[in-house]
Amino acid sequence: MRYVVTVMLVVVGIIHMLPLAGVWGGDKLQALYGIALDDPNLAILMRHRAVLFGLLGMFLLVAAFRPAFHAAAFIAGFVSVLSFLYLAWSVGSYNTQLGRVFMADIVALVCLIIGAVSYAFVRGKG
Image (tube, rainbow, N blue to C red; front, side):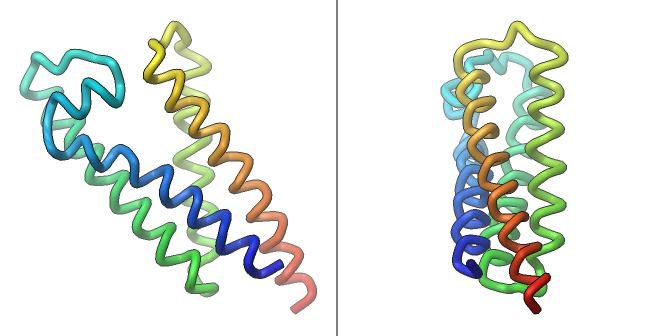
C-alpha cells in the first residue's frame, strides 16, 4: 500500500512537470494551450506559470519518496488540480488543447484520490 502513495504522487508530479516546456517560449506555450501569445506581458506570465508548475511538479516528485512530505504534497496537488478543474468548468468554452489539460487533471485527480486514500490507510495502520 505504501508504494501506491509513491506511484500516485509520481504520476501527479509528472503531469505537473509537463507545462515546464513552456519556459522555452511562445511556440511551446501555443502548442500546449492553443493560444496566441502576441502580448509579451502574457508570454512572461505564462512562462512564469510554467516555472511554478515545474516547482510544484518537482515537489510532488520529491515528496513521493519522502513520507514526511506526503500530506503537504496531497494538499498542494488537490489545490492545484481542483482549482484548474473548477475554473475550466465554470468558464467553459475552452479549446481542444485546454480540453487535454482538463483531462490530464482528471487523471491527476483520480491519482490524488487513490493516493490520499492509500496514505490515510497506511497512517491508520501506523
